[in-house]
Amino acid sequence: MVIEVKALPLELVKEACEVGESAARKYVTSKVNERLINSLDIQVKYEEEEVLFSVDVFIDLSPLSGVDPERLADEAADAALSAIDKIVRGK
Image (cartoon, rainbow, N blue to C red):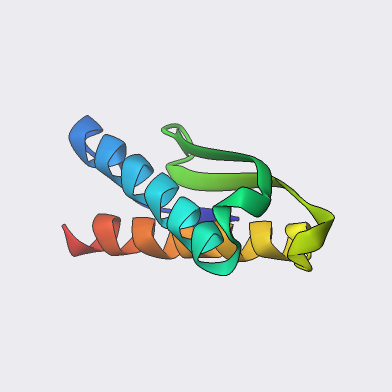
């Protein structure tokens, strides 16, 4: 998932990355009990040359969760990008 934006100040980039990571984590834990999450890796990146944010979410879930981890990862990445978009466009 990717969002293109205009050049941003470093402080805003840091805030957007932190907000995006938090939004993805909250999304995942709102859908699956934390005890059923074997691993969760969220990578939020900002590429200055291309002026875009990207979010990758990798999830390993217990089979007992009954949740499709790939779908959940995509939805969490969308939630992260939505949160980043609000920060970037709101300032």
